[in-house]
Length: 431
Ligand SMILES: *Cc1c(COP(=O)(O)O)cnc(C)c1O
Image (cartoon, rainbow, N blue to C red; front, side):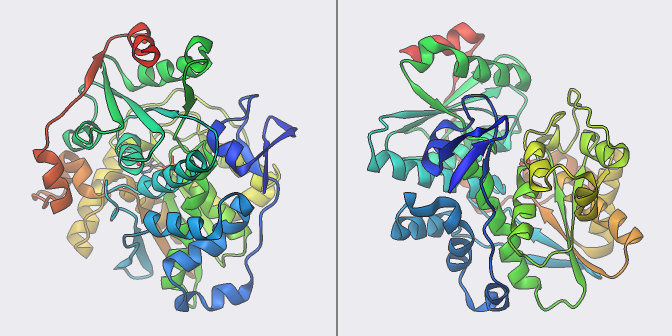
């Protein structure tokens, strides 16, 4: 499969090149030259296939012969070695729990798949050492650190804003050691992000170190997210109603992968992009005007994105036809107080505890289903509620139990290197 740059269709790259580079040289996002089709027979026999078999069928044409079949099966096996249950919540509504991975966030899947692919290319070829450089506001860092831990030939450097990630998130970033280094930045997330961007453009650094990023811009982190929707469909296919997925969205990587699965033939009628007050896309679907703005801070902070990078891919998927896009995608936005109220109400009514991101997904689904009867709806739970302990416990008025996997991380010792400014980052990367 070739991938072209959304900024210039004449520039294209192989799967390997696109994974190693992340972004095209002209800063465009990579997009597959064609979307393969899965047969209706495949969807009919889904319940007889394992997770690995399903995922392999879905991703194999995107990878082509660049990773051997045996190695790709191994990468998928390791990526998906936890559960993806659809749990009924109330009448005609269920939730797809994506938080059973090692860092309790759905980003584990993309991070592991990317680590496996990049690790394979390093082992195979003459790429040399690679440094994965990422800024995190919370969940990305932990998933990336965990996914890349111990992968030969890769160093991971994570920048995080001092005092602005939760205690659990900080422990997940700073306690692993080995090839993972956490830089604790005296500043906000935006400053971490700016420093990372600057480093990518700094030739003194890039002549010395091969840098790549590990956010959902990278096709190896973006595409495997289509697995969630196939694994959910396997559990939902006996429903007679039409199906709709509601996806709590920030950078729009996850929902875009779901839309790719639909394009490949997944029998899902509709998608809802659920947003917090960062509502660029909600507004776009209402007015036709796409107006990015700076992000505002909310309790569903992994979705505090003012200019979602993957929306360009969503538009490409619908060939920039506004009518087609609106037919398959709706979007709604919610405030923090609506989100907290939903966490409380669903707990009291249904006994189910949602995290703030899942709660936004739930609200989006309810709004859509009110206007469109006859659907069975699934919202994605993108993080375990324990990662947002404060908000969740205050909303439901009760303590929640900390899972064992997290308890052991909490006992480990934090190791980070304090960083004040870009010069200190550069000194670190140059040594
Ligand atoms: C990253 C993240 C999101 C947003 O996903 P996108 O693919 O960026 O839209 C939603 N919820 C949680 C918990 C996340 O960590």
